[in-house]
Amino acid sequence: MQENYSIGIVAPQTAHFDTPLTLKCGRVLPQFDLVFETYGTLNASKSNAVLICHALSGNHHVAGKYSENDKYPGWWDNLIGPGKPLDTNKFFVIGLNNLGGCHGSSGPKSINPDTNKPWGADFPIVTVEDWVNSQALLLDALGIKKLAAVVGGSLGGMQALEWTIAYPDRVDHALVIASAPNLTAQNMAFNEVARQAIITDPEFHEGNYYEHQVVPRRGLRIARMLGHITYLSDDVMGEKFGRKLRDQINYSFDVEFEMESYLRYQGDKFAGEFDANTYIRMTRALDYYDPALQHGGDLTQALSGTKAQFLVLSFTSDWRFSPARSREIVKALLDNERTVSYAEITAAHGHDAFLMPDKHYHAILRSYISNIDIGDNHAK
Image (cartoon, rainbow, N blue to C red; front, side, top):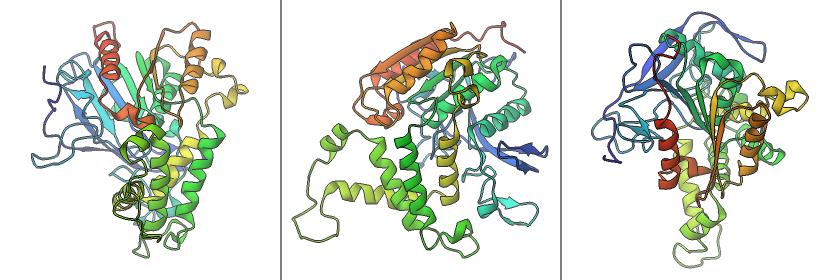
């Protein structure tokens, strides 16, 4: 088995929906597009489909490359492909860009059919529940009645959890990785600082910066720099950068330390690729998600209607979505006598560990996923 073997060249597809979608905020999208990619082959009984839900800055390009010269494969390429933990010789894997995204699905950058101009600030606030509902419509369009599994890390894990709540009869297995049932106050605070960096950028223009042909680059850059600090552990930062100087101390506010150089690079790169209106909506969706809210804060009650089997994974150095938050999910599932496997993985990379090709982590995934049954007992 070649662990680095990729699924090869892939291409995105677009699904268009003319049926109006009512969102949790009360607004209605009259029509919308979802951009997605698929890997592997859907079997005759359509029982081998696995949905990948992306995190805050993710998209539909989960695995493979767009050309032979493509420097970077999809963001979870180390996990998905022939012979990899999520084996595309067995499973039909679907990745998509969520509503409100900036990689082809309907979002602030796309055209509002009522005005023939970009939606901009007028694009509705979307939630995890809205994403899952739109994902279900995509599966309907593909003729898939039931998922063998839904998989997600971080914000993607929240979507995986919501799938088991909103569509309990359409999910056999849910893999909830480095996630939480809701955000802590500290996490919400990080999101608010990131949003304020963007919203107060003079180039933001209340979200209508497309009309001014500018980008709130400074705000988006600061938001990403803040995010990177929370995604990495202190140990990884210390090992990778420590207090290393780039050259010599110049007693200025220019880049003096390697850590500063790294953060500025990441901020600049992200600001050139991502959309600010999408970023503030994704962080808001994180803030709003709380399935226990309508059950008086009782997560056990919120998960009482689930039917899937669960794999819940956390990482020791992840302080943004700590193992304690994953254990809340596990406890609520066990209270409901659900079948749940849990592992707390020793890893140094902090929250970003769920994206890394850690051998122990991948061995756990491989073991669990290889035992997922795609036989004729599935709905057809």
